[in-house]
Length: 423
Image 1 (cartoon, rainbow, N blue to C red):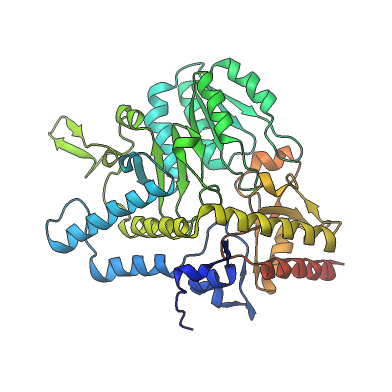
Image 2 (cartoon, rainbow, N blue to C red):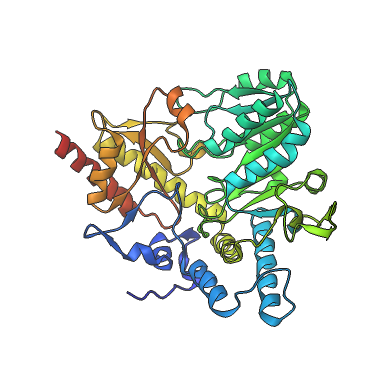
């Protein structure tokens, strides 16, 4: 089936996103799974890709595949220009003051590890505290565990309430420990909770700490302005925001990047190399050793422009409306369904973890799959959060710009089928 991308202006109707039109940008959504139209409700794991991104990656490999920052021939210069244009597009998307403060990485995980190695091993010493939260993805937990073990530092955690909201009163107490760093997620990948990042950042700075924010689940769903937030580091993945896998970025304040040693060493991150010493390149290239995934970075830039053209305020409004509809329909049709997180779409993104009583989440996901409905089942890389909620696992439905109310209806119907099969 051949798809023709809709006109950009047709994706917005009466000031709101039209997901039915937007879906035509995503070829995979025209396919079937087990003989049913694909209903993709696992966007928190990875998002689908619009034609604009797919074609940008394809065009790179077809027309100007060459290394960046090296060749002075035509396609080499075109490759470099497209790569750096993508950096500028990402900077615009998050309102970074300077595109040179955007470091391309493979994903948010690599971005956080970059900070843990390059900043952490230079600044964290014995007894220094790092404050995290109970809701962190493993990517914003395990790197700090390793750092604390190596440097003999201390990890402290902001607990959550039973409905998945951070205990700000405890956070205030933990800040009295004068931590060197506070690191927390902008949006929980399991509960969808949107944390008050501006307020939390200010509190941390007032206590003398730097702030790292894991924005992997925020950039696809809410407006992100790193200048307004005021954090020191902001990490995110491209594959969750309609971009290619293997793409992501770290934004950090220039003075921090300039003071940090390199994360990895090799080609392109150097200015001058001798047998016994080297001089580092300028930022951001100091942190981009070797040949990068050029096509993925270019695709990420296109994805950033795609979302920016839709308007992140409209993206947020669409998702909030869809989440409200989903919670109402799920509770109405399945009042015994176990739902987690605060039932308030104003402080929550389009992520719904749930359990069907008496049925393992893997069985739930498998039955839903037979109806073409794709959801995640497991601990979603948040095992400590599941332990806090006394859960082994959950099923999770998650939304994006292409999700419709019909997708939600398919989920609701699929849960009925789960109950029928398991009695």
